[in-house]
Image 1 (cartoon, rainbow, N blue to C red):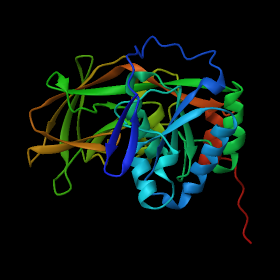
Image 2: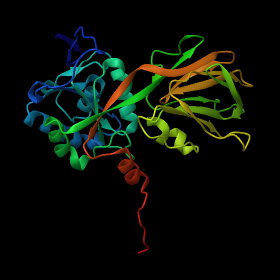
Image 3: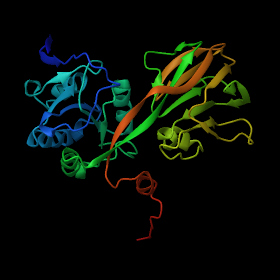
Image 4: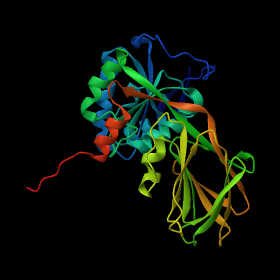
Amino acid sequence: MHIDIVGTYLFAKISKNIDYHERPRKNILFNDMHFAIFGNQYQDFKASELHRVIDVLRAIGASFAIESDYAKYLFSQNLIAVSDFSTFSSNDFDADFAISMGGDGTFLTVANHVGDKQIPIIGINTGRLGFLADISPSSIETSLRLISQGEYDIEERTVISIEADGKPLSDSHCALNDIAILKRDNASMITISVEINGEPLTDYEADGLIVSTTTGSTAYSLSVGGPILVPQTGILAITPVAPHSLNVRPVVISDSSEITMRVESRTHQYLVAIDGRSVDCTEGTILTIKKAPYVIRTVKRRGQSFFKTLREKMMWGAKFTNT
């Protein structure tokens, strides 16, 4: 373990030579488990939930550390004392579980940091909707204790990646939710020529195009009329954003497909959003989207099915009465 002093803060960086693809994560005694805690820096008013998580982890004998940027922010707001906690860099850590404190946006950030490490992610929802972060603040203690007893399931979620002219588009070129090709704010609509496995699909004239995983089908894609995809079905959705033609509709394809795109724009520029992380692109670039070579592992409470989550979050079957 290496201790770095940054300003007035002590940070513990844990660095191990581990093959994350091969590392088994079963049959671990809970008091030997280590948790990496990530959080939303814009929710300081919900820091009490973090303290509740910490209290439970300490009570059941688990070790933990807080992501350094999150820890610095909490300390700056007098919400924690840094000397009481170990911290870690989001780009250099290992754990048996990662905990995401926030909404689905925070969960996506954690998934990006976890990458191919195969660390299961526990999502505690202190945000709004919470399809990914589905543990409510009211059930923090119960849920963590059940997890400590092995009462949980692991769901493996497909990740997609994007290349530009055969090379990764950016350092963070993989998405758990979606990859969107979008016009710039001051631009007219763009034309996106799409091929699936080398075969032409169509030319989309639209404000953009979204390629979403099953996980991302309830996010941006859903808001522009895309279908809801059930996890573990091995499919992707291609959904246009404000298409010029009314006969253009979403298309569902196998997640083993390779999608090739060429974009034309009057400004000769456009944006690619990878789980919301925007990258500028220029006309003439050949974009390739395909399944990444790893999955993201999410921790689900027993009995919390996708359809149950849909009913709760979409309020299907809810009856409203006038008072």
